[in-house]
Image 1 (cartoon, rainbow, N blue to C red):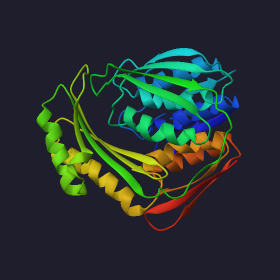
Image 2 (image 1 turned 90 degrees about the vertical axis):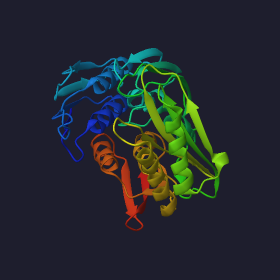
Image 3 (image 1 turned 180 degrees about the horizontal axis):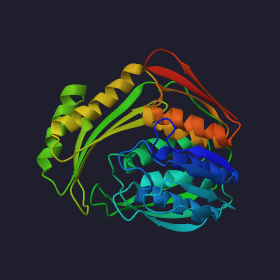
Image 4 (image 1 turned 60 degrees about the vertical axis):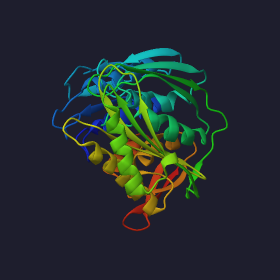
Length: 338
């Protein structure tokens, strides 16, 4: 049994999710203590508990400590069972993080799976559905993953009420991922999305994007979507020759629309200035699929604490070597050797 310190490095839920995924993949039991010790409210919240229970269903696992606020958990999987599953977070907690816990093992399963996930699809503390569909899924398709997503209803924090369906077919012809250059930028799109809020918020946000990034009016789109509660997100999509990246910023109470747009624009500018293929968040999420497949290499921004944490936890379960080669103080190449 592997013993994991949940307070290591960034000390958040990423440690738990990575451990769950790799435990399923290797059929190795683990015990984690001090779960989310680095957060204001330590222990399991609903979205973390939903990830644990989703992993337990998929892996027929024996679990102890799976309760709200629990800081210690033991997880012992038996076998992976693909199939039809319904995973409900029960709050606005992130459905995409629950999905990412089980996706890597289900994509390598022998039969297809159909997942229905309910809760938050657009949560400021996690990758939103749009990032999943437009950035993550297309890249893992390059290593052989066959994943199809469908947003049923948007669920914003704090009301939730969102839902999405994800079909995962068995991966075929696994390949190493090689993404060292993004190539020429071909298309830019800025979407300002509002739910149960004034449309003028979206217009103000797009005005800032046009000014800060100097994008043409044809690149700017506003959307009004149905949702249980109010919500606002700015989504910047940059499609290059070799990869598409997505950057998001969420509206929050007492935060001006202009500040939300400036946040998104700042992320996009940093990515473009570094001349790398992969952004910070996508880099973090690619490590596990690559480690379980054929490895590879990509260029990205300076690695985040999440990325370093993922590398450390992967090393506890797999013999895979992950090397970070810093190019300068803002970019690097990450190579995964299996």
